[in-house]
Length: 121
Length: 110
Image 1: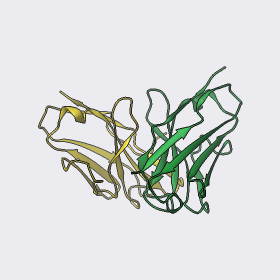
Image 2: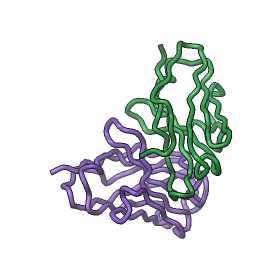
Image 3: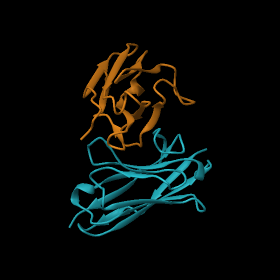
Image 4: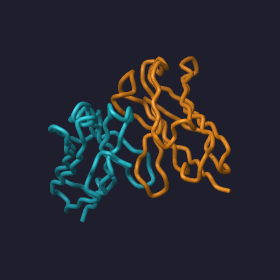
């Protein structure tokens, strides 16, 4: 069965960096687009970024553009999110999600359990 | 901010039918497929409907989805207490180059 396990969350000061990882199993990782989606405490879902199966396409939400970078290692079945210049408003649970297509344009069909990132001084 | 609009809340008694709307535009729902998610308190979202009206394996047939033009709907028939959750629609937006979520609807079983 599909499993997505996020790691790397924690407490970080504003302006610092953090790298999230997502270990995937139970499907052919290199065949599917992958997403990061976040949810601030008490708020709704906010899409963060997507990467296509072959790394040819990457897109970002406006609130993280220029600060966050999505990447993947198909040889290790792992997805990453490098978060730089973190702000208090980046505080959220970050979910890794598998797309049901290769491009990343169809949407998330499987979700990880999430990892909490808290940005605070 | 969200570009897909949903009512903030919906409610019904056990056994009733509840419908949730999702209003978008020609750059998202009008041109791409719609997915629906259910999020129970304290848990990760779960895919409920994909490709407008398809149910993943294991999702009860009480849940159904439809799409017309730039709007979509999720219907829950035979409402049960375990259906009390937040529901979100989502679709790819070709103008924003982003996967956009709805504003979310909290369903309460009275």
